[in-house]
Amino acid sequence: MPLEPLHYRMIGQDDYAVEIRIDATGDYRIENGDYTSHAPRRGCLDETQRARLQRLTSALGAPDERPAPTDTSGFIVELSIGEGATQRRYRVWEGALAEDPELEALVRALEVL
Image: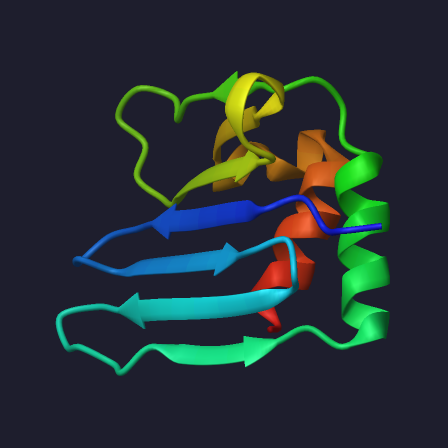
């Protein structure tokens, strides 16, 4: 079973950002930086990583948006899974991730790629 394409982006303070794109074959590209630039990393998920991401994405609830409370700083997670009419999109303030354990588990799995 092919992996659903996945696009993950975390935007933070001081120009910090992480962007991960994974295609249906498991090839990925990770770009991250802050006030400095870092060369993108590329790779391909192994079978264990593919299976884990498939399990975590299938466990997610309905797409959701949880903005940061007023006058709060922090990171915003943007995630899209799939493509076209079946694409699911999530946009969540990192402080609210604990309210959605399935989404938090997926975000943490992506952070260790």
